[in-house]
Amino acid sequence: GAGVSQSPSNKVTEKGKDVELRCDPISGHTALYWYRQSLGQGLEFLIYFQGNSAPDKSGLPSDRFSAERTGGSVSTLTIQRTQQEDSAVYLCASSLAWTDYGYTFGSGTRLTVV
Amino acid sequence: DQQVKQNSPSLSVQEGRISILNCDYTNSMFDYFLWYKKYPAEGPTFLISISSIKDKNEDGRFTVFLNKSAKHLSLHIVPSQPGDSAVYFCAAGRSDTNAGKSTFGDGTTLTVKP
Image (cartoon, rainbow over all chains, first blue to last red; front, side):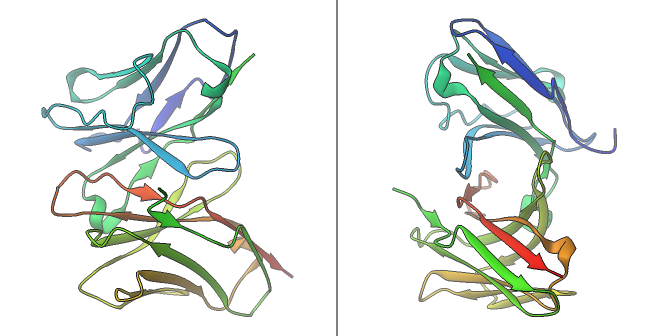
């Protein structure tokens, strides 16, 4: 596709349930990032994939969070045993050359844990 | 420890006037800086970047200034237009790590009044 596609756009889940968020990056972009934005806050880095290298997981807030990127394309962010503090907009981005063009972000998945 | 700070949560300017958005950073290892613009319910959109070897970069109505000694950058929008009303995020990163991971500020909401 022409842009970064994320699904679902909205997700309401009960506390304690697992959720999966999907990101389809721009074709040819080797770098893929997950960020999240809590209400009134900036963007918080979660995880970064670059080609076939081991992902940078340094931003994942707890071991309930994990992410995969299959075949160097689609990525799935999984949150196990969701908590209310996980409520946020989860943004995926991809890039070719981030220093000159920045990231291209998707529209995000708004996760609400009730 | 917030490494990128946007101290003004909001800014209001009149159409046609200059908008100046400010950003401060603490990590002297940052050598790449970016501005993003975000409309509601959309992902951030890359606007303009600047490398630490420069002190100014201009693109149409948008100019970014970098003062390395003060660890400060600013985004100037001239002339401001109502369509510029959005949240503006400052971001910083290190090109030497080749990680592409950016640290974002909390954003400044710009309102341009007709």
